[in-house]
Amino acid sequence: MTRTKNLSAVFLAVGLAAGLSACAPAGSNSEEEGEASSCNVGISMPTRSLERWINDGEGLKEKLEAKDCTVDLQYADNKTDQQISQIQNQVAGGAKILVVAAIDGETLGPTLEDAKGQDVQIIAYDRLINGTEAVDYYATFDNYKVGQLQGEFIEEQLGLAEGEGPFNLEPFAGSPDDNNASFFFSGAWDVLLPYVESGQLVVPSGKSPASNDEWTSIGILGWESADAQAEMDNRLQSFYTGGEKVDVVLSPNDSLALGIEASLDAAGYQPGSDWPLITGQDGDVANVKAMLEDRQSMTVWKDTRELGTQVETMIDALVAGEDVEVNDTETYNNGVLVVPTYILDPVVVTKDTVESQLVDSGFLEAGEVGL
Ligand code: GAL
Image 1 (cartoon, rainbow, N blue to C red):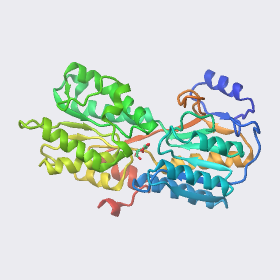
Image 2 (image 1 turned 30 degrees about the vertical axis):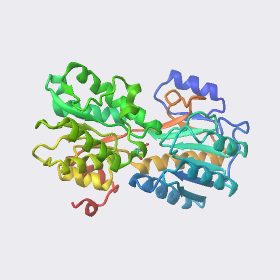
Image 3 (image 1 turned 90 degrees about the horizontal axis):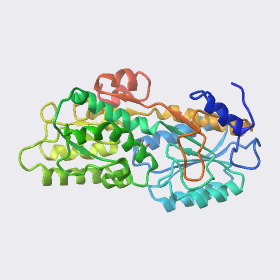
Image 4 (image 1 turned 30 degrees about the horizontal axis):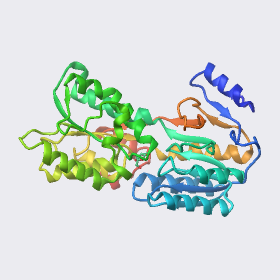
């Protein structure tokens, strides 16, 4: 692949040859384009309470330390102030590259602008950081496609395109402060809302956003399982009192799905009998077990090892002062700039493909999930 220093030529090339990889010069938003950077990396993850972030942080740290990089890995307990001070300490401690999975994508601008002023390069990890030019690159899975896969799974399993229905649906959305959550919801709701409007899908709780923009009305802050459980309890106790049953739940990720499954248990639903279709995301161990027990129908798998490898490749290029390979320069506008991005593809995993996809790839051990 030819590499070019001229960013506008890169974007033009990308516009003309959509879908091919492109390059953004190292430090594409800083004046010192192309300067090499030392491999001193601060990794800032949101929380240890969700399995995937443990895999993300520790996996990337291991890859970078294997090439003698200096790495500081921090988890911020889903507290934005804590994440800000951890990032400030990483920069003060000499980090020249930051890899940040933001808790709240709207809050890190000033901190990252200070870092940029000290020639730090910034990679947004999995979640876009908004409202600042101090984001050089973004690495993520296709967030809209995550939701689309969930919506299409429901459409296919229920035979909605063939006119089947009506079915009782309870939709949920992710944390209102998470930029990804709006993409997840839009991907799913673009598939499902037409079926709500046609009456094939009915939402007895009434928690049915009239448009994608209203997704935060059904958002669960911090992706908390307990809050999803409480919300599902409330819906079941308030709107399913006459013997009617939930047929399908749109859950944007596995942590919410766990809470919803606990609520269904408490309400007496039985797997293999009246248990609803439930979607998820992340391939967490507890949820893979739930799939094997017919308590969850699918999860959208994002192989965090792939994302780590992609970020490692970005860091290699930054350290070498070379251009950074991206494959999308149009989708992720953070309100100040369209961030050069590398997008990876998520895939659907079901009970029938757990072994071939998750175990055979080494993502999970068979013993972890009782296989
Ligand atoms: C999202 C992330 C998902 C999901 C959620 C909870 O931003 O892309 O994988 O699990 O956060 O951490």
